[in-house]
Length: 317
Image 1 (tube, rainbow, N blue to C red):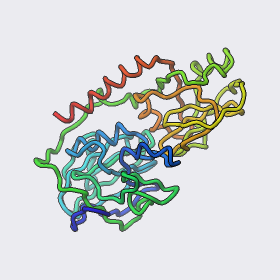
Image 2: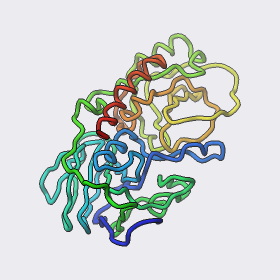
Image 3: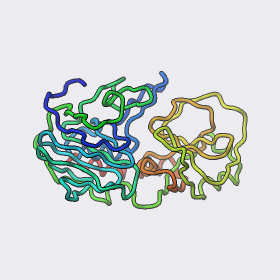
Image 4: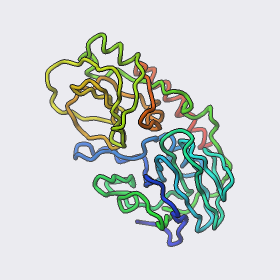
C-alpha cells in the first residue's frame, strides 16, 4: 500500500465469496500479454466513486454473488451501486446508488441477492491499494494489484488512498432512469465484427435473433453462451489482439463473450463486439441468465453511449 493514512476506515467482518479491489483497469499493456482487468461493470464503479466525490477511476470494491459485511472504524462516506443485494446500515435498509454516511461503529451489510451479479462499494478518498503497472485492479491470476493480489478476508482493514473530498455530501443519488436498463432482459447492442461474414447467412440471422443463455462456464475472463450451433467457416487465423466485449465463435459454434480478465490475443473469429453502452448489462449476468444481441452501427452505439455517459457527467455538477 502506498500513500495511505494510518487510520483504517473499514474492517471486513465477513468478505462474501468474491470481494476484491478494482478500478477501471490497466490499459495499454496488451502488447506485453497483460490483460486490462478492472471492474466488470465500469459504469457502476464510476458512479459509486462520483457519488462520494472521488475521481471515477478510484479504487473501490467489486463484490460478486453476495455482499460483504463492513464495519466503519472511522467516519466515512460510502456508496453502493450495481446489482441489488439488499444493502442495510445497522440492520435498516438503505438506498443503493446514493451517498451514505457511516459513523464509527456502523455496520454495512446485505440481506441477499435480489438481481444481478456484482455490486460496487466506493469510499470517499478511494481505497489504498497495491498498484501494479499503473493500476490498483486486482488480477488474481498472477496475484497482483488490489489487496495483496487477492480477494478480501475476514479481519482485513481498508484504508483511504487520500483524504476525503470536502465538503462531504451524503444522499447524492443517481436515479433509476439515469442508469443502464438493468431491470430488463438484456438487449445487447453489438457491432458487426471483422469476421461476421464467416458465419453462414442463416447463422448470422440466428446470432442476432435468438435468445442466448449464459452457460456454467462463465467468469471474469468470459462467458460461454448456449444456444443454436452457429455454422462458421474459413481458414485458420493468425492470433490477433482482443478486447473486452469481443464475441468469438470457436469451431464448436457456441459464442464466447470476453470480459474484464480476457486473454490479450487469440485466433477464434470475432463475429461481433458488444457496444460499450451494453457492457454493464452483460457484466451483471450469471449462469442461466439470458441475453439477445441487436446489431447496431458504430454511430448508433456511440450515440447511445453518449446519452448514458451524460448521466455520469451529471454527478460532477
